[in-house]
Image (cartoon, rainbow, N blue to C red; front, side, top):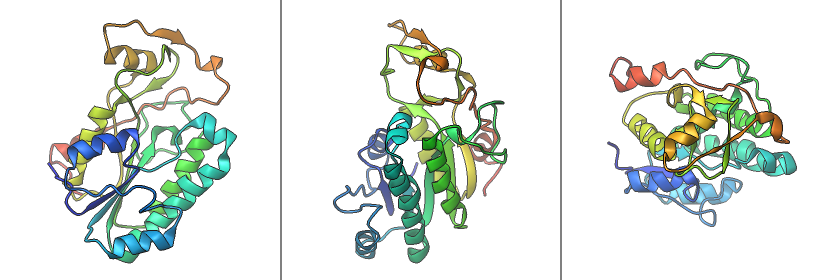
Length: 243
């Protein structure tokens, strides 16, 4: 398992970043005052003073309702900020790993493969896809599409009519770190088996009852089925694919 030496992680204060800190003790986790992805000059100064081989880019403006209310911040962070990270990786010849989302898919089919057509249904997902487009221009990069959540489930209710491959942030972070030891580029889907969000929520804590909710009950657009085909990830972990 990679200890994180030579890795710079953005988004260290986030949910996923918190788990990366436990798993990658030798990695560097600069805060926004040191390495703000909307400040290219500051980024360049920071990278020039360190010895890095990989940027693990997990920083993002992630809440769909908040993105709807403030699309400018999503533009600045998720699109322009990721462009800045890609440029920095190119200049310093670093491997780039970008954390993306299952929400890039329309959600009308499910079991999506890496090469299936993308079509987001909300502004948050469009902004993450914008970042993904930038990363795709860099050959030495890996795009990880995934979905995760905290433990325990933070809400009293969960969707019974939305389908997902979501796993806990603990599980997903370990799966992502396992990929860092592999010489893998392109796109990889990381997640578990297809299940409803309600089933996912209930699986995290059997001691409490999770209420039921419909995607029709919320004011923002939610894709119906963004479950992922994670066959490529399994092949990589089993050593059947090296790149």
